[in-house]
Length: 439
Image 1 (cartoon, rainbow, N blue to C red):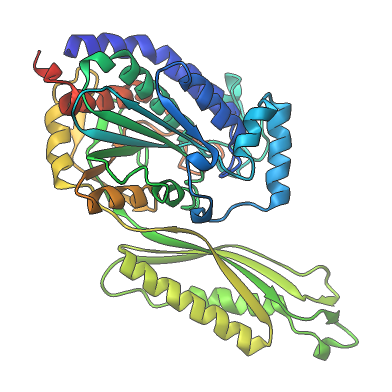
Image 2: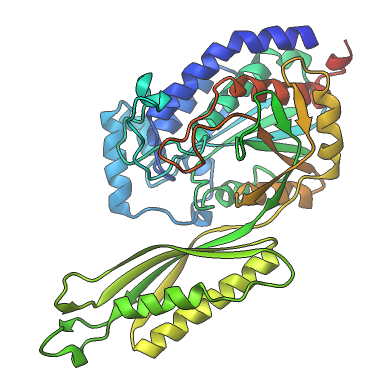
């Protein structure tokens, strides 16, 4: 089987590269991945999977931070212009993006599930010749949206794994669920798939990420640590406009109130039991130099080593937001637009992954763990699997990085895509392959 997997990996590598480049060009932000969803569906429809889209794939009410109806309509119009058929679009309108694919081999065995995030970021991609997607002609076609975190590669890995399961289903046992999840950025989409029940009866769950830190191609990290819990908060401040020269006393300055909030938020004392973080990443307000600003807007996030530490940061943030509003006599409305919990890779996978991948001729090195030091809403899926008796892991696939994640020149070595698919295929064979790796 090792020889078969090595040969198969080499055969699919050109397709992985092609899929990745297609996906990179169609970069779409969370809950607006209409073209991406159609692309995934088209690639899977002939592979004997049962496919679920729209409200069959996720729980509408469990989504965080869904864009406004106007924004969604703009993206839906773009999707039509870019070739998504209207009858397909009608099934996913309103931000109901993503695909769930299931396959039952008909033979008793484990239920394995895999998550692949599909969304991009609101970033203008670099157009310099040094940036490979630009120089080789697959830069994002959607200005202001870019796959700057590797989700194009994650989706390609998912398509490659689907191909492997389909082509080898006669040699496999049990059942498989592949979750192509929207809106990972901002921790907004995973819970909607969890609440739909896709993770309720899963024995083994795997997900992963390209990069994180520069590592040689061929390296697979068995367990990510320090996946921080997080809360994303939008704050709208309403004061009272006034003439800054003639009647400043009649105004209530929303911008000053917002500034006070920023200073107070960044003054929250860190929690003594674990790492905590806060960041106000966006602040807007005012309309002119001679007008007391009547409106302001903040976007911020909190993080913590565990859900408990993050809850402390969240509570303190809200207290300071409300306190500053009262101090400056303005009204404030805040909304939770994203949230992620903490989770850890199970001991089962920590032991099994290095043992199994030692057999691979494509995986060159297995590293035991690596600190993520960021947040990922895949933790909702991991926790649900763990709470129902299953085992979950979050891997990292090594690659050099042209620039850091969320940078306009972010890029990675595409050969790591084949390594990731090979690693997941080996783990499938070990768990559901009727002893295939011993052959």
